[in-house]
Length: 193
Image (tube, rainbow, N blue to C red; front, top):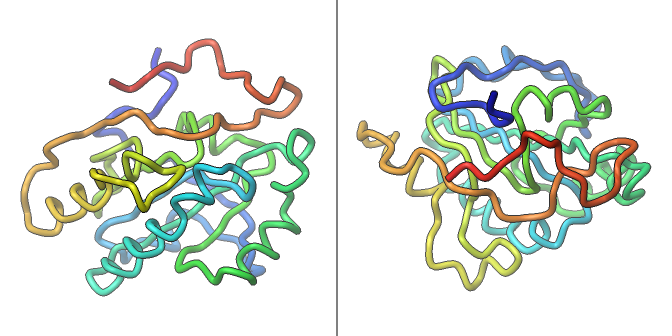
């Protein structure tokens, strides 16, 4: 049994509170031809180092209907910086162009098989998974990136081509699971390639 959602599988539904005061489900993004769901947080240096690259990508493709949804599943008991209040503060400070959801129970992270922060999932209009993995090859310092897997995937999809690379290994901090050591990973979690 694979931990991470497999290519071709449907996006698991969710109902999660956002930093904007609303609650969102998968159906709220039904009009988007492409949906990027990514697991992120407030404190991880790989997230902080690549958030502006993710912003540029989200802005670049927004006019083509690509929607971005960030989900923080980290336990605030492991890292207090990842609390919902701090999510609200971070969005107020940075005004990122995505909906930022809180997965306090971690059920959504389990359903998607999120491995690290950040970990990206790209879905088509039918919400079938077409790509999973990293955004860029150097997320801790995205200014040094030589490969942008996320943009390559979106370019291919929007031009009607097949996705050439369906999976890469996400690079970042592991998800902080409730009640576990900060570096714990589920026993059946593994690299994607």
